[in-house]
Length: 158
Picture 1 (tube, rainbow, N blue to C red):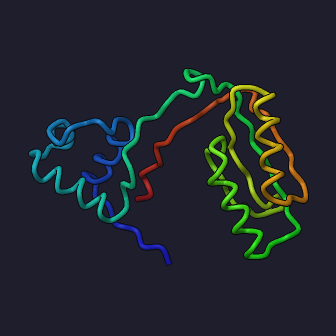
Picture 2: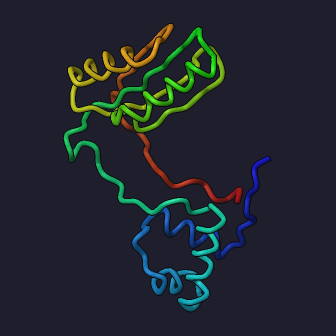
């Protein structure tokens, strides 16, 4: 059973602010939430220790570094053994073009989000993927337009 920390309004506001700008200082956070820096910083430390805040990262625009093609790769497999899953997980780790991977329900077993500079680069990625692990069916869907992209989670349920 998943454990979740019950957040009060101040905790939610701290998380909301850090999801928008993780570079905010304790002083800046404190000013926004109506606390002094020390208790505000303690709250941030608790949120980190409890696993609510897992990392602070810089988000990079893929196009700015030449990664203009996003592909959703849908995978079906006939092999659901532990050995196959181990090979598949290793392939996920070895292929940096895969930025997200999900085991899903329904007719598709896995969905990958892949970013590459071109269709030719995707073809090279695809060949490396199928060389690493046996797949029953692979379908690739090229993203034509990114309509919404956020890393901020909705906090109304926290």
